[in-house]
Image (cartoon, rainbow, N blue to C red; front, side, top):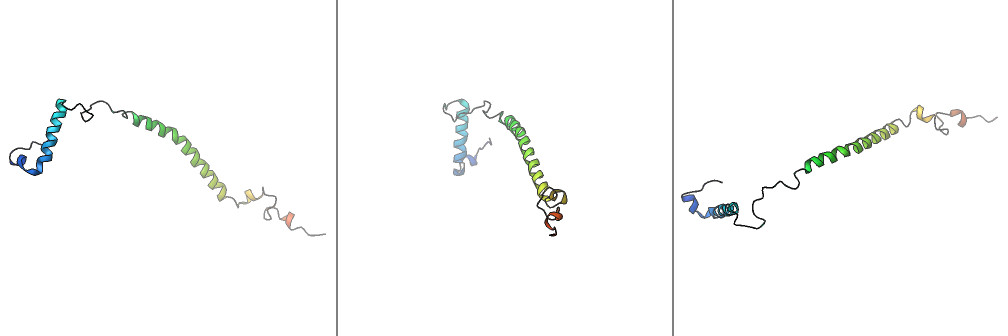
Length: 105
């Protein structure tokens, strides 16, 4: 903390700073036994980032499969009118004109 001495210490703008400094010193001495005391233990979520990375890695497989499925769908939609796809449709007049344009006789 910043050392505030002399005339600054007596100004009313620094009453909150004085109170905070006194409170911090009291906490460091252990005068407060509540939950407001300093806790230097390892946080409960310290190893959480490692688990997040594992979950992210597990979800990349599903995401890549999903993107490949979408790419395949888009590819099939794009080549919908190709002759290679139309010949499998027996009711298509472009691929099978002889079935639809027969002469009576």
